[in-house]
Length: 407
Image (cartoon, rainbow, N blue to C red; front, top):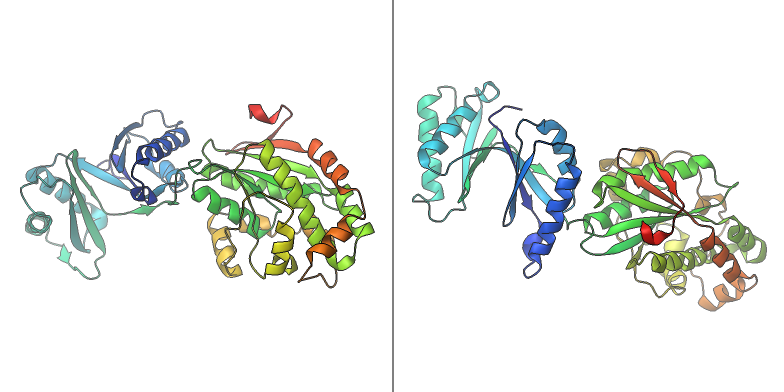
């Protein structure tokens, strides 16, 4: 990118809605930005209200852009050229930018944002002055205020004027971790990882729980989960996610041995919720998150979700509850998880599928069926033998055998 562009201007989105605690949110997002860009040693930073500036000092902006696009709380950003906020300097910088070869024989318009209300000219007057200067000096330039090839944005502020021709859009939402911690129930399919992404986007720091049933589920199925979560680590506050791997084989075998076939899925999900609630409390999380979408499968009818949800007193959120499948797929493609999710390896939810699963289960029947075996002992054993894995952005994962409270 041209050396004229020496800064990145970052704009916050939903933080504008915050008032008394806005500084707390800004501190969180600027900390995340600096952490994500820590390998770029020449960068300098400046925070001014609802704007944040990165001085490039020769760093490659093309390597920085993809990272900023994945940081929750950033609404948009631009790579900008900076000058002092006086009219002569502004006109001179605008001319240098529009004199570049890539802008020759293009149509353009100018948009001025006059953030410095003490500046002696209005936004419209500044736009006219820049336009006159450009058209006097550039023969090939043409105006088109309705459908231009290029929009020259002039952001005139107290601390300086920033000029740019392109805006990049970020994740939006709130800074990572500012809304608490959630435990995502992740299967390996398309939906659950998308629900994790949407939670991260809204400022919830996540850990994940996966139910493994070897030998019915394979190492490849577990690796798929790991690969999915690694795609989300860049969105998290510390560029890492903890995965809890629950040994679920004994419980699943007992369900299909002792209970009615049409209630197996309902009871399996109730066991998962009990285990997830246990782990949620252990890690001091505030909420359980899953990828359920209303009516998508038998366990996601309103009747099924209600009966399943009865076994936990935890807050459960379902970011995808009202999404159509195509909308979910579109998000998964955007965050590069779709191709991983469709790898042909079954998780425990797809290994045993009854021919006619119950879509309108009853609470009393579910309780009667699950009481046919000593499930609480099995749950305690599964939680005690849960493995914890730390996934880090752009690195191989490693198993952590220490206590959770040091993670």
